[in-house]
Image 1 (tube, helix red, strand yellow):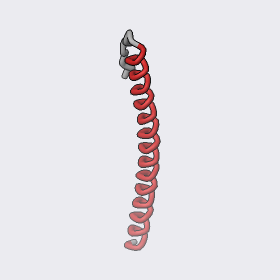
Image 2 (cartoon, helix red, strand yellow; image 1 turned 30 degrees about the vertical axis):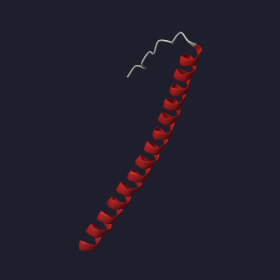
Image 3 (cartoon, one colour; image 1 turned 180 degrees about the vertical axis):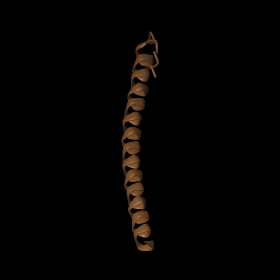
Length: 62
């Protein structure tokens, strides 16, 4: 997805406020990406554990 273009406001305070909001958005994006990666890793670990338990169950039945 292409980044959105925000035209720079003319006044200094508007430019400063826009820069502040864009900085907050970038920080939140980084935080959410890190949380997503952690949740994905945790999910993959749980899937591996479930597969291992299923194999042990199958081995016991055999």
